[in-house]
Length: 272
Image (tube, one colour):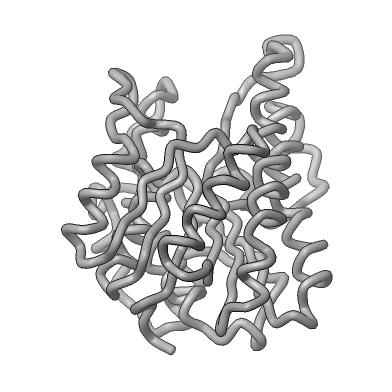
């Protein structure tokens, strides 16, 4: 399979950034995109809403269903999944993209931030997967994709921001467990992580970081497309890196993904 035409993707946090890039890439194939995000109204700090994302998906050639969902709320998630399945006749793919970040140490991490990261990253991933599971089991080529890093016990990844690391690795541990749990069902559960920083609006909010040293979200979207069009029974439980996925698919020109070609690229967190 080389196309997502007619497939239904439920994507969390798809109102902007990487989630939106994955959505519009799939939409170019003629996919149905469920945009599940909190952004129902414009935010002066972060542009993009579920409605602008839906417009972008439809402009790219897909069908869109914009649903305002807080993935911390079980009732909202279950209702959104049911509405998506009713609208499009099922769910083929779940992309757990929504994430909360706070890159501070223990003393500088308020408990509300700790709770938010764990509720969105780990718990939200678990909840959305659980809610979509009945539909994924009926799909012809079902995939669950987490935007999370390869797990590591290297202390250097915990020391500077232990709360965020634990929450993000929680998503990755879901990959390990769920891939094995759903192997017999033929549901592929994989993780995808960028080699370099990705130029998103969230990155712009981190002091001292320039998007000139980043790649665009398109590289993650193209890698996700390659994963989601692969046979679900031929690979699961993988921790994949965007440029490695694309290199294996025959891509050789990575300069097109650079925000400023020729500038040095900064590696993303959790990668040596």
